[in-house]
Length: 251
Image (cartoon, rainbow, N blue to C red; front, side, top):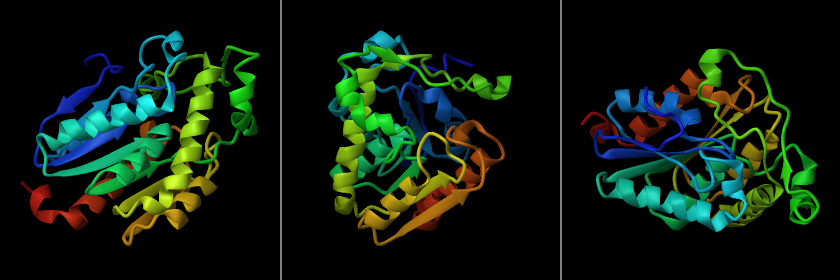
């Protein structure tokens, strides 16, 4: 298998799925879901956000607007080849999926543990803390090797980057009423990184006439790599797409 940290594009039918990874992570964390979608015939594009997949130092000067622009470039690339675009994002990527829904005419949005409301309450103070501490880290969890290979997060990251994540979350929460795209919200009940009520905040505040919420009992925050929950997610995403575009799904 190629370097999992790198972006990828799998050509398929006229339905394109843009997959956006989370904070300090890489496209690898959504690779299992991406490959399953491609096996079903969909075109799949996994992007690498600015400051990610290299060294933590590269995050020092990145602004949340840079992440939004990167996601927009991913949407634009898929639109060159596909008539319908679905944006799927995990954690911070979920925030960017919502941002794309407010900015584009999309065929659908899927958020997985979107980071609207983090568990760590200090996140709201990172705008100040960045002047006193340059880097920080989170407790590292032990994962089985078959899951760890997809979890290529930085071991530490700039506090300034965490402040940009907070700015993105605040901005995304403000624009939720602007979103009218069909939306699937996915959240685990045992998430210890993003508060589970984040899913309810999204569901209750978007203006989408067609929306659904999938609650998973387990899988924690990194649920896209944890079986059997990631299979449940993939199945639900496929149902979400096929219910709306049965003809294109089979092409």
